[in-house]
Image (cartoon, rainbow, N blue to C red; front, side, top):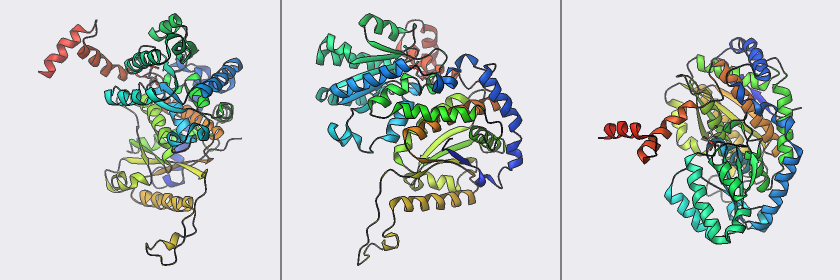
Length: 450
Ligand code: PA5
């Protein structure tokens, strides 16, 4: 049994149920193609079986590392970019206290997780070093290729910082590398220095790697139950890999609905949440769908908003701008906490009409009001709902998104598992930095910049 539900009632008038159902036959074929590994990108389908095949000894090792790290670190730094950090961050931020960084370690019971190597900002790294001067920390460096520039730079700087702070021997014990089993500079470095390592399987791409140590180690260090997370993914795997109809299979429904909307002239999908803690779920989803589908001059553009915050910014555009958008609302049926609006005798702020109501109820009404207004403004809405944010439901949700993304990519006739377009900026950056081997490109670019 799974908890996630998907509702497409608010597509009525935009795309018909018949049009959506027309995708069913193709989806059954693509489901088979994914399971038989006979489609585009079939070398990168290891993620499909992950929930059932996670090695028990690896899980126990991750849990043991998490305990050790909890004992000796106030901060855990996750160095990685794209798929090498977004899954972990999405799960951790969804589950942790909204002000986790301001709790003390006893209240938090786990190190505070911070991120590096996901940008090349000198200010960001320098500010991070200020903090790391003051606190005990352990780091993980995550790079499947082991050669990505952003995390490599951050790792070089933090490695040096760790060695200066703790000495080479202790620094070595405070580094865990998550990378390829045999290839890449990081693998070589980890081997030479004797760092603890975990492997990113060959057949799992970065953005589908949340159920490997890439996601599991940071989530465990942050104090969350990775077994429940895996259980959720397992339940969703069972459903989406076997159910053969759009009405029974939520991944079929989502893939079909968004492709029907795309073909009807809605090329932009905005993922909507009503909880700031879910912003990184959206960021992870954006990477998953953007990198998987945006190729061959095709693909639905994935964007994200956090309501009601963004109703006071992007809300105007969504309501009245170009009518090329549809929204997918990630609805959470029950919050973790309880808080009501207090009543005041003189009602000086005119707010007594909500006195006694839960903040959640006000948020729900905002959600419903927005839904009706946006649909009325010609923005169709898909609703994905989970009963509450917990490890199990996040496991379901993330696996659902992954499987639906693979199906949706196949509907678009693209390879959802490569990302050739990411290389273009890298080539130019290397050429402009004078990396050996890029001389011709340097010359070409310098002419363009004259
Ligand atoms: O999904 C992907 O494959 C990418 O986003 C990668 O995760 C990202 O580019 C980082 O790559 P690497 O793990 O090789 O450093």
